[in-house]
Image 1 (cartoon, rainbow, N blue to C red):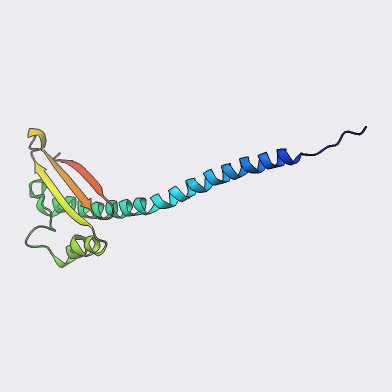
Image 2: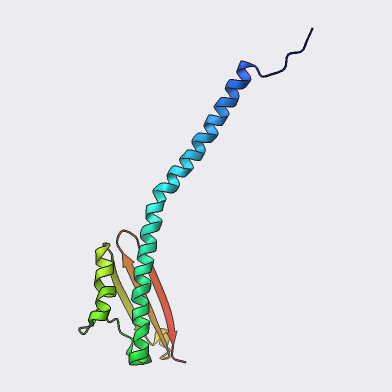
Length: 133
């Protein structure tokens, strides 16, 4: 009697079921990753817009000195040079940007806290502590 080599039909069916379950799990993971891609992209845009505003505020230190921290986007004298950063970039993509500048942070007159919040399709909060040293 000769021994047959190969797989039985039951073994082949079980193998196919296992491979199908594994493939479905992998495709489900890809699908979830693609759904989250939009959220990550929106948050990256919010972070970029917030970083532009933070750079603009901190850049005012060069012109106005340490005690002159202002957000030029909310001041009455916003210049055409800051107009693109202040409004066009944020509003074109549906974001709202606000900033809070706290002088004498934690009672220390040599520290100023700057917080920029961006909300919209994505969100980001940037904070910076600037010292007068």
